[in-house]
Each structure stands twice: as C-alpha cells, then as structure tokens.
Length: 160
Image 1 (tube, rainbow, N blue to C red):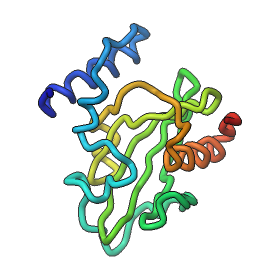
Image 2 (image 1 turned 45 degrees about the vertical axis):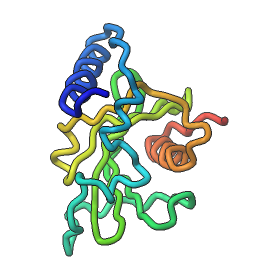
Image 3 (image 1 turned 90 degrees about the vertical axis):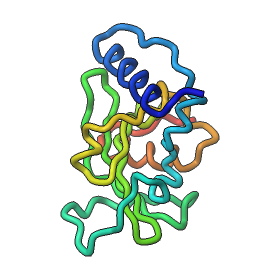
C-alpha cells in the first residue's frame, strides 16, 4: 500500500501528463481508493467541514435518488479543451459540506474525480485524482451526477 502523499504525487503526475498530451503512467487505482475519493460519503470524511449558516453559492440541486441522505449541488460546469466537462459539485450531509471537482466525458459515459476540498476555492486546486476516466455503468450516483452535469452543459449524456 502506498502512502497518501505518494498517491497524491502520482495522481498529480498523471494529471500533468494527461494535460500535456502525453500518456499518463499506470497508477494502481486500488490504492487511490484510500485517498477517500468517494462521492457517496465525501461529506463524512476529513475533507468535510460544518455547513455554514449561509452558503455564498447556492448551486443547482441535482436529483440523486440513489443517495437520499445527501443533497448534491452543481455549482459550475465548463467544457475543457478536450471536450469533457469539468464540474464543481457540493455535497451536503448531516450538517457538513464537502466539494468535488469532477470530469465527465458525456459522449463516452465516463467520469472521475479530479479534486476534493472543504470549500470551493480549495477544490479548484486540490488533487484527489481517483484514476482515469472510467465507465459509470453500475455506479448510480455517478450516473445521476454525470447526467445532470452533461445536461446542464448542453451535451446530454449518451445512452447506456
């Protein structure tokens, strides 16, 4: 098992390689799971903070029937150079909030987490890469999030 610091460094190197057009090195994504990159319980991790009385960005509530105990919000989405959609999401659960930066390939039905953080500013820069873009099949929460993000961006999620 690799340390969290090493896992983050490897993820960052892979992300830089991907951005430069080079193929990223192979990363053991099983070890990345230890980074706590789970959107279903992100607000239950050390990344989460107590929910402020007023949030500066309200966001758009995302219907997530597969996660009825949390509320997920889309704060921002933008199309990346490669055509994927980068989104900033907020999860609210049990009086806490956590943020995630995700990437979705709407045409290929692929999704992954790029970063997580306790606030919107940090999630833009923190790296918690959970591996390469991968299929959302069999992952209902990720499919619900991807569907909403793709629709919001004007690029509907391809049929599964």
